[in-house]
Image (cartoon, rainbow, N blue to C red; front, side):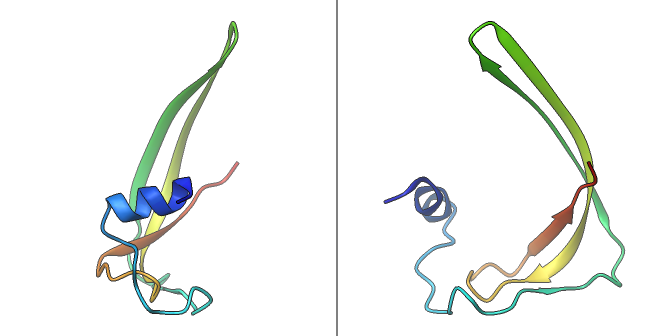
Length: 76
């Protein structure tokens, strides 16, 4: 089982019979939720940081049984 399958399985999001190529619908006319991410990566003696804000919109992905899904956009 690959890492993504393990992650999705752990969240209860796998084993759906919907085709993986089914379209995802995003409600871009809905008010956006604001999300933030802050992370660090260390490689040897070098540490890199990333802080980002992004807008998330309600969405429906038929590949998942979950009813509350969001698609998030971040500018770089």
